[in-house]
Length: 143
Figure 1 (tube, one colour):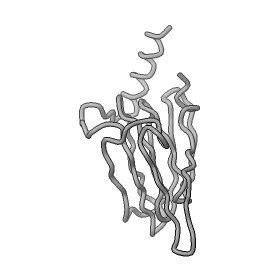
Figure 2: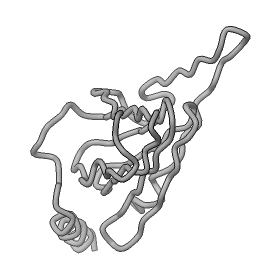
Figure 3: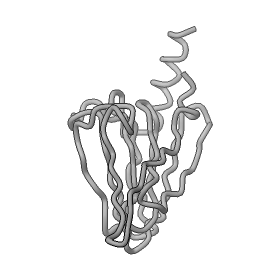
Figure 4: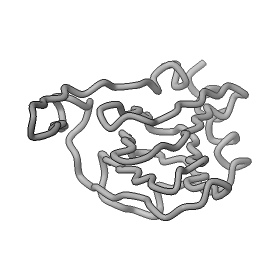
């Protein structure tokens, strides 16, 4: 599978009237997995880079429910894509074994993260060199 092309924007339905707007996100319906964990990032300065890791099993959908931020996704083979999250009805899907970096946070940014797995430190790859080596090894095994 081409991981870099699997990372993509997801548009969620928005329901609104004179009272305001409502966005609903359902696991296995609006996103391609059952939601096992929810967390959010706020209070990060624009020059701070969050993430800087890959996950062996977890998939994610990231949504800036307030403000804006950018998400860089890398495949360990020299390819990368940058997403600008600036609308609360748009998310970005990040597949497993993708390196992710979140940055350029606006002062009011609240980045909601929906994850397919419960937290397990052992599935995190926190060194980019190690990530590249695992990607190359997996590619060699598949050939």
